[in-house]
Structure formats: structure tokens, C-alpha cells
Image 1: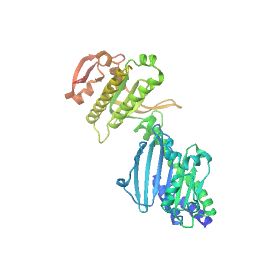
Image 2: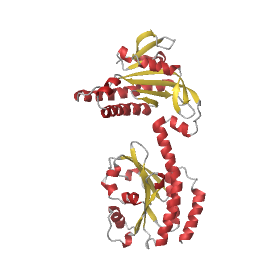
Image 3: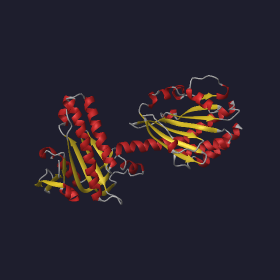
Image 4: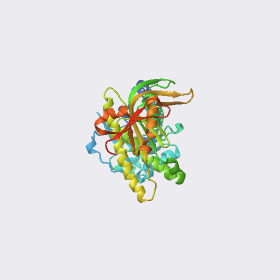
Length: 415
């Protein structure tokens, strides 16, 4: 049986390893292969650490029952998302968890920490084991399971992953089956690595380049000078008196203030269709580009909403800071409608996916005048024309250093 199972698995991998685009499909069909070979696997958990600043761990759990979202009840405050995917013979639940999940009692009392620490499989024949150290085994025993098997995956790649399987096969697994299962899972892990690498690369590119630029780079847009001409709303913001704040307060506090500030602002920009291209300490560059479904007036309105949301949040944060005798954060934001060159700029060994052009320079210059006019938002003439019923003229024919064209400066009708 064991040799035949190995041969059948090699044939299955040859046919299916590159066939599936989604990790849950790969997992589900692998489970069905095991069950077609009479292993009677009814519960599977596959998870591990995530390479993400906010998400610590991910998990895929399989049950041979078809369930829907209304049947799922999770109260863990660290759970970010849980998405059920139904199949003909069961459901896979995709989950993500915030940082701290591995500090919880449920994780500490599970076999997984021991699995990673010892770098070896854990096999517990439930049907002939009366006592054990893991509460999950007692839960499985009550449900009629006979076998529990867990194995680390991809530890030599520096990525913590694992898989555990529970079976209700009456006779349990003999030693040959356990050895075969170990070999099969080592090969299964090679296919699994493709999904892990794709997820990590996509996640990192989105984090460091943005949700629009990241996929373009991943798709192969990596040549120097490979740029597109785009019509866009350009956003440039700058924190006022940052040098004074950073010089007079502990670095740890300043970093926390910056993170709080950028968390809200970047979240709003992304939520309303923009993309942050650069964070320059106390400054930020973003765009709201047009596409076939979003015209420039729509994007101008979205940029205004993102600004208003960020303004209201900053106001509340500053009220808290005043009560705590901490320095408030004030900023200047410029919004401009123009044409940009969007793509790869740099040297042969260091590229930046960004925007350049005269309109980018103008947006930066306008932002620097926010302090002069005592406004936290200034609008260029071309932007004001897109939202003309909501603006007021601040000054006409303003001259900016390095730019030949005079510019009319506006703000929103109310401060």
C-alpha cells in the first residue's frame, strides 16, 4: 500500500502541481487524493508565519462538512479575516491573524510550538492513547477521530509553516503509512512553496511600492525608463515644524506620532482610489490616477474626501496631544490636476517606481506655501476648476521658484 501510495502521489503531483492558481484549491485536491487512497482525512490545518507588518500568521483549515459564513463564530480579537470556500466534499476556511496570536493560550497549548522547536513530526494515535498534553487531541477524541499527525513545512527556507491532519480511520495508521505520509508531505511542500513565495512577494511589493505599482512590477515592468504618461490628481503633503518636533522629543515618541499620522492618511488615500508613492520622513507624495471607470472629476472628489477624513482624525489626535502637553502635528497639503510620467526612474542597480514632471514640481511648491497662507490645504488652478463650487481664491498670479508659469492658488470654501 505504501509504495503504491507514493507512486500514485508522484503521478498526482506531475499532473496537478502547477495546475492550481489558488492555495485553497491545491490543499483541497491534495486532501481528496489522500481520501481516494482510504486515509479518511476529515480535518486539516495548514498555517504559518506571514511576512507582513500587521499580519503575524495565516491559516487554512479544512473540514469535511460544507458550511457557510453564518455558521462561523469567532471571537478572537486578533482575527483579521475568515473566508469560507466551499467544495463538493467540505469547506476550507482562510484566516489571517494580527500580531500576538502566537502569545495566546490556544497556540501555546497546541502541538505547533513543539513541532517548530523540535523540527520533527508529531504523531498521536488517538485511538490507543489515553492521556496527552494537548487539549486539541481530547476535542478530536470526542468527535471520533483516531489519528493526529502534524509535520513542519519549509523550515529550511526560513519560513515557519506546518500542516496537521486528523483521520477517523478505524484501524489508524501503521508505521509504513506514517513514513509514507512524511515523504508525501515533503514533496507536497515543494508545491506549497510556490504559493507562499507568490504571497510574500505580492505582499512586500504592495507594502513598499503600493497596491497599484506593486502588481505592475511583479508583472515585469522593471526596465529603467519604462514609464507611462498619466492624467492624475497629485497629492503632496508635508508636516510643519517637523525639525523642531524631532529635535525636542524622544525619537521613539516621534516615530509613534508619525506612524499614527501616516496610518490614517495613507489608509484614506488608498480607500478612495489613490496610491502613495513616497514617504519622505515628514513628507508624502501620492496620486489619484484616472482609468476607464474613474474620470478626473471623480478622482478630484475622492482626493478631497480623503483629505477631509484625515483632517478630522488629525484634529481629534491633536486635542488628545494638547491634553497630554504634547506637540500637535500640523501639515500642509497641495492638490493639483496634471500630467505625470509614472514608472521606473533611477540607475541600473537602484530603481524607484514613482512620478516625475513639471506638475509634480508645482504640487510640491504649492504645498510649501500652506504655512504662508495659514491653510492646511491649497489647490492649484487646474484642480480648483474640477471642484469649482467648493473653492475660494487665495491669491492670483503667484510665482514659484524655478517655475515660469504664474499660478492662481485656491482653498476649500471653508477652512
